Amino acid sequence: MSECRDQFNVGKPNGFIRAFSLDEGGNILQLIEKPNLIVYSGADVVARCLAWQELYVPRVIYFEFSNATPPTVSPTRADDSLSYYENLYLATGDEDYLRVPISVTPLTTSSDASKYDANVVTYYSLTAGTAGEGGGVTFSEAAGSKVYGAALVAAPDLNDKTKDVIMSRVYFSSSLSKGPAQVGIQWEIECL
Image (cartoon, rainbow, N blue to C red):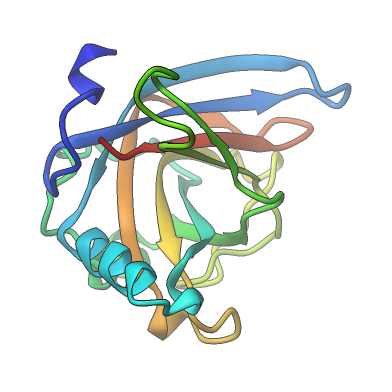
């Protein structure tokens, strides 16, 4: 994980995700671990939070999914923005995204107790809903839904997705099937 320990800098990995699919008993069926990327608009989120604009804290996770073979995705780029998600459904009609509120209060921890008290923030979320936000694509086990990417998003208005601001994105090395339960994510952002 040393590549995740760079100073906070847009366009570099600044955290780590653990994405997983669960069975009905809550057992992990599949686990993916990898660094995430802070995109340019992520710097806007941090600046707004530092300016006491508390509505701009990350409050939503986007789960990107497909009901066909998940697309071959290019690496996440620092200039990726909300417009990517606005046009996702239009590409094939089989792809969409879920916009899911973060399910628990974020946890703060320290990556190095000799230097920091709480420099790592961890967010948790599970997929919820049966239809995508962009084109209403069905999200279900029967439809063969597979999650292949995610984004950590500031949502100043939970009722208006057009105001969302992408903070960080990630694509998985393999897709996670929705299965009988849900797909979840643990998302860490580290400030150095």
